[in-house]
Image (cartoon, rainbow, N blue to C red; front, side, top):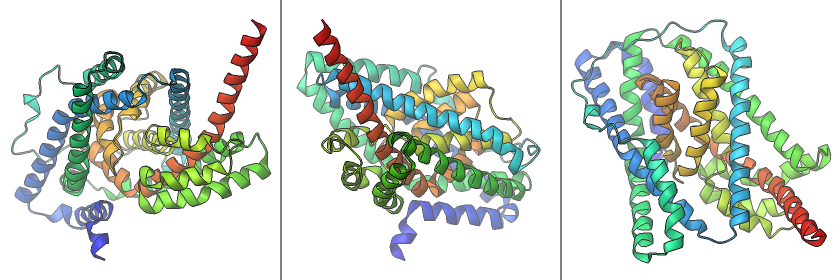
Length: 396
């Protein structure tokens, strides 16, 4: 019981229930104080993120060094494509699903609570996540060629520091972050119709996610239904481990062991799975994109048009390479992207953050299952590329 109480997802669920039951009757000064606290935490996060993104990208690229550049390039491109297809599938499902969770969107919700103070104005205009991403790519690609051990050591030490800030800092205050924004929603209007529609939307999302993962295994099995079921059976223990641990990194040994059973060359799994555990996020991409579209729909903004979605998608997919391998870490990198490219306000941000924490076991298990299937697919792609390259050399 003590372990359950310390679990951040459980704490988030408790504060959401508390806000839903008592939020509308809580004293206004207390609600404003909680709302101010939530805004303060959000602003602190926005100030920290450009530096964090720079560290994550630069150290990730340092890890690859200059070895196996063809394998790295093909692997990165493959993972970008897989994350892109998962995102597009979720975007399409959000349109289809809107016919089922309700015929019309809720009226736009407007903020009624005003914070006692805000610190967002102290952030300079140049201090943006996009610039941190660009600088991280430049440094990460350049450092291996000049080989300055002191800089490499400093960057790796900073990554440890940034990861601790996420895992021991921001991830621990998620319930407090969510509480203030949910109080604001409860002070604004009747929030329960949104919850009812949200439950229907989650069911549609889960059905779509299962179908998408089945399709990946079907392709990995060479369009053979019997092999598809066998591959899923082999990988299922890894998915269940991911569900219970809520950590793709902690599940990695099981993922490798189970994936080896589905490969022609079992040695491929220990080489690919560790490199893709943090960047292959089929479940994450599918769930996050679907939730973004649903939340925009519920708040009266509407699902983005395809042009707007493509601009968002290009940044979203690249940003998946910067996410931290800690519970709840990835969502922090995504928040400014949602705000900049989809127009998320503070209440939308709190809602997707709450959903992210509550659905984290499903996100992790679907990432693990997707990673296993894509490793088999990548083996086929890589063998095809290597075989073609060998044939070209013989022809020459």
